[in-house]
Length: 96
Image (spheres, one colour):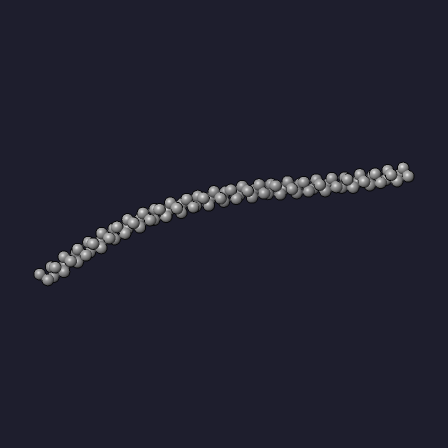
């Protein structure tokens, strides 16, 4: 009887050892997953900062383009008035 108890205790100890090994393997896998998630977080942070930088660049370009278009429109307006003036002068000279 005592021998059977010792054998059962040894089997139980073996089972606990196997469980401990399995838990150690699971812990390693979780550690690996944690490292991967940390890496993903860092990469996403970089992507986020690049997106913010691009957004700022686009906004700055939009402001600059609007300013340039206003300047071009003003110049075209001046040229249009100049053409009207020259055209009027030429028309007046033809009739004279």
